[in-house]
Image (cartoon, rainbow, N blue to C red; front, top):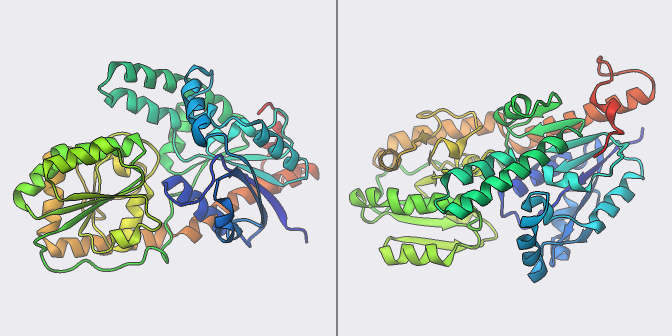
Length: 429
């Protein structure tokens, strides 16, 4: 029996694994490899793509790439010029004739289903697409831009964020309507796509964590005199920078007043020089690692993981990574938005600076609570959010779409439903 064929199109090269979206996608692809589908992966090529050949081979049976239009000086110029483009900047910068040509050529080779990773990849979908299509979303993109417009204190930037939000919402609505299935990474995001965007073709899968990679270690039962507090996340993300600024300026002084020897570590690429200098000038014992190949050595030994986010969207895989490792988490509500976690049982949730600091201090000074919280959090992710389990859920969605397509070509619906969105597969992309 012929294995079904799946084409997976990513608008970004997936390595190194330095962002939550990349990690989520790689976990899914690793779970698909060797299963029901023969997987072909298309993406832009990083300058050092050859150095990742072994990792790519674990994701797909075949890999093909196009030149990355966002790299180098021209990529930076494109980003600035894209402010004037009808598409939102984050979509316009990915425009590539080579990418569109490659995707169209591969789709002519008879795939059972095509998956576009992020709504941004919809720009590569041919105007007439005979292959049933799925969009794997990682956020409600317009919502992120809208939140930036609210919190940014610079009037010109607020105007720019609103302008980009309007563009993204128009693009997101139109693009997602042209997929047979839209997969959200939380029930919350799925609800927004249904209620605000009017989409009926929505499925959801949870965010997943590799439980073998992020192994559990129970917290120490002692009260540390120099506790280590860790944050992980790319520091070229405005949402992460905003969150760390709030942590440093409003939360850390309250922690240091009780625990003056408290240490902090910010693990993530490209921290802004101004922020690093600001922390140094304040004299806090907080260091920035910059890019690291593996976050685990920097997380091990941490007493608390913090997620002090005030803006952003989607779900934060960093929460599940810390929980899997046995590191108690203190987060804002937005930092764990969309995750089925309970305050006081799996983590501590606080949105005001004093309450956030109290949450951190309370856990540090109460080893028994740390131990109980860490064990409960690990059980939650172990029972529900392992990477293999979530990959199988996604594979089932792909099989449903592919099987429905095959059934309609045979003149019947094997899903027990009348031909639905797949029947409209010749609509414009």
